[in-house]
Amino acid sequence: MQPFIDAEELWGILKENEGPSKERVREVIARSLDKHRLSLAETAVLINADDPELIDEIKAGARVLKERVYGQRIVLFAPLYIGNLCTNNCSYCGFRTDNKKQERITLDHDQIVEQVTALEEAGHKRLILTFGEHPRYSPEFIAETVRTVYSVKKDHGEIRRVNINAAPLNIEGFKVVKASGIGTYQVFQETYHPSAYLDVHLSGQKRDYNWRLTALDRAQEAGIDDVGIGALMGLYDWRFEVMGLLRHVNHFEAVYNVGPHTISFPRIKTASGYAFNKQYEVSDADFTRLVAILRLAVPYTGMILTAREPAHIRDEVLQFGVSQIDGGTNIELGGYSKKGVAQNLDSEQFQINDNRSLEEVISELIKKDYIPSFCTACYRLNRTGEHFMEFSVPGFIKRFCQPNAMLTLAEYLEDYATPESKVKGYDLIEKNIENYTDETFKNKLLERLERVKAGERDLYF
Ligand code: SAM
Ligand code: SF4
Image 1 (cartoon, rainbow, N blue to C red):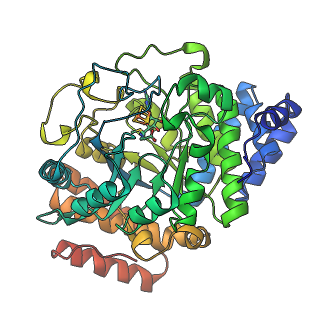
Image 2: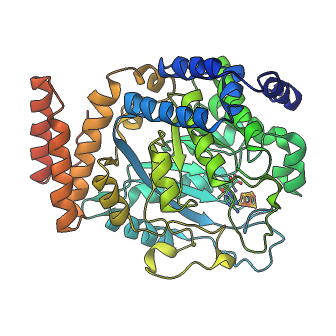
């Protein structure tokens, strides 16, 4: 495959669009609000808009777009670390092979069951399983782990969607993992800049930039049309990374006729034995700005933000269209069953900055009128890949995502919420139902909510 990232080309586009006029910036924002994915040149215009007034307009644009496309629902998930053996040396990661301080653990079957049970008892329905890169974590091992997770059922609890964040595989390997029934397969490029990439990936398979860059093409070839891309912000200039992410989106659209399902933009955090090179540190101001720019650049792609960020940053960027967040996160191997233990970086990948429980995250979302969602309907009705794109049209969110968010929230309120959240959650649901003018649909939704209250589970549109 032809490499589709040309660093000089991307820098060239950034330079050509330096110092854009106010009119040009406003024109680009308007184009995005018309729900067009932006071109590289248009995105470069937003990236180069340094005037605080224009940055505010970009953020305001992202808020409007979020309202129009995503409504008020926020999808919740939890990461589950399965094993931290790793043969790579990514300088920024606590799991790197040279980090002798790291205690190496791979959860066995019973330990996985114990963790998933604890996650179900908190109310989770969607997990992302995470692995180091190691021969032990073969496609068969990953697939077996996925099957184990799906098999755990505690009371009304079950995991309905398992996503994966693991090393790139070959096509055969991706097929094996797909057969276990995964949702999204995520591989982050970390940095799209080839020489910056070599500076931090010191040894191991991951040092091969192109093998990683083409990972999700192999996933597509293997039939996984639900893929997640990402860049680790802080390894290179964030402006370039935003362009790299967009170039990756273009590539998928051009070759597979479907963009990635999600984009992640984790910001680098302290890790065991890792001294952060501050040269490319992304400030809070630039971070929130880049999230708003990405929202405008790719109106229809889900955006994920994790507990690496503190609650106040999460709250701000939720307004710009982050559509998925984790809640009650614990990234220690085996950590979900040991409640209340402080982070120990020598047995974890990096520092997290949002330690709120799932219940706390949910009750704060409700307070701000967001509808917490555990919906997994699209993936189970085969509305993935190209079909998902087709459904990302006006009305889809209102007809499917929002009602499904309410139904899954009602399940949570019945089974796991505190009495206070239960009252507030149902108030929020009622308020949202009032917005439906189609009486037939409204009645269908009300009828399903009643069935959830009566004990039925897993109802969706
Ligand atoms: N081993 C797999 C891989 O490298 O693709 C799984 C990756 S890891 C569990 C998930 C992501 O965490 C990485 O792709 C990287 O972007 C991110 N990460 C690693 N170290 C980090 C750090 N110090 N701070 C924030 N994120 C980090
Ligand atoms: Fe291993 Fe992934 Fe960490 Fe790199 S980021 S050291 S590949 S776990």
